[in-house]
Image 1 (cartoon, rainbow, N blue to C red):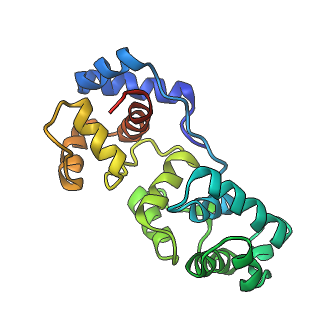
Image 2 (cartoon, helix red, strand yellow; image 1 turned 180 degrees about the horizontal axis):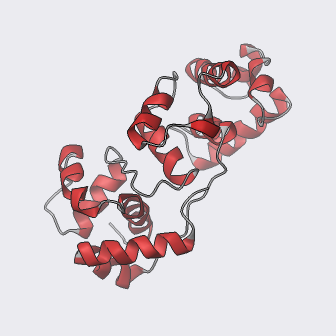
Length: 205
């Protein structure tokens, strides 16, 4: 499971000691809500379906995929559903290939969500081998579903923008710069990311 409210608070307390700008921002807007997802296949399937579409559209498509497949809790159900039925549910041809690839990798045992490597980078590497899972999806999975507190999605545009705003930088820092800035924040970078997304939604641009 993801970082609980207590875990998030402890990490943000520690982060505020390391970087006072986070403590100041937190004093202004309060703590973020925990972002917790169930570990396993279904959460990653939902992430793939939700790529590059609105939350509302993703929910509608998922409901249709679930109806077409007779459920999305099992990779076998999705694997047995025809490409035509999945496209009719609202998935693009590319996403049909992605969800079928995910189902196949899980069914074969090549991707085992219950036994991902303990090392974060190795776990990311194991997931991104699957067509349709990029680094961002893998990082968010580890943060929200497994509660790995030092995962740092530095390639996320909102994280880059909000880190720049929180630290009072001129303009949006690059992914490379955001990685450099966050080195002193270890092992609390996951909380920094969750707080950055919270800042994005609370503080007017």
